[in-house]
Image (tube, rainbow, N blue to C red; front, side, top):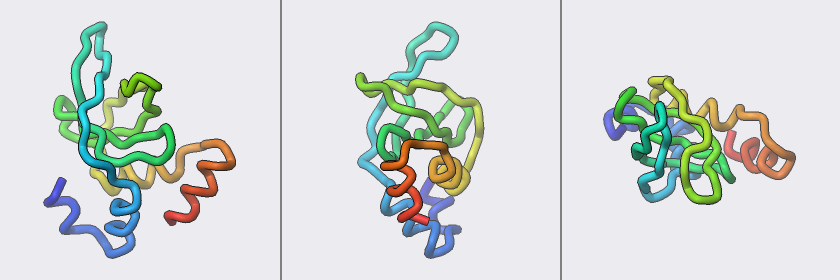
Amino acid sequence: MSAQLIEYSPEQADQFARLRVPFRAAPIMRAGVSESVFIVAQLGEMAIYYEDVEDGFNVSEVAPDGSIVTPGFEQWTIADAIQHLLAFPCDPIRRGAASSLL
C-alpha cells in the first residue's frame, strides 16, 4: 500500500488521510469459512479493506460486530477503492460527509 501512496496526487493523499483508520483485522466469511482481512479506511459504516487472497482493496459495509458484510473479489488499488467508497450510494448524512471529502 505504501508504494501506491507514493504515486498519489496531493488530492488523493488528502482523501486517504481523511478516511484512514488504524489498521484492524475484521472477520470475513468466504465459502462458509471465517477468515480475516484488514480495514484500512472507513466512512460511516462503509469500509475499505485489504484482501490478501485477492491482493487488492474492496469496499463493504461493516456489521455491528465488526465483520465484513459483503465480501468482494476486486483487486482495486487503494485509490480505486477510495473512489468507489466516495461514490457509494448512502443516506443523506453520509452523502454530505462523502461530498466534503471530494
